[in-house]
Amino acid sequence: MSREDHQEDSPGDIAERIENSGWYSSLAKIGVAVINLAFLLAVIVLLPQNLNSASNAIDSILMPLIFVGIAFLLLGIAMHLHLLHLNLIRQIQRMD
Image (cartoon, rainbow, N blue to C red):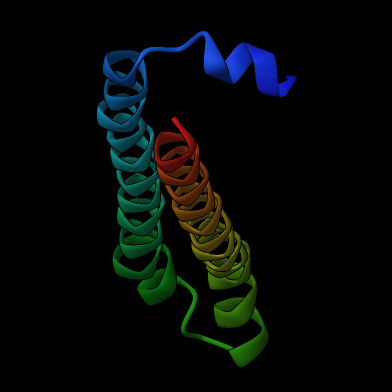
């Protein structure tokens, strides 16, 4: 996107973009909450059934644990990009 495209946006359009960007942050948090719920269900349901050996217990919880780790990693990346985007929009507003 060129600088000319940004100059065509009115301050109202930029303010609307800032307001809408919070929606994506909420979606990312909801996604992490769903993954955490699935992890808790795996711990509550699968882990007690597989406590007969350490390898079975680890196998039953390893995949959900990996998904939780990836979810938090992606949430961190998403929040970082969200903040960078807001900073860029504020800089564009100051230029106008």
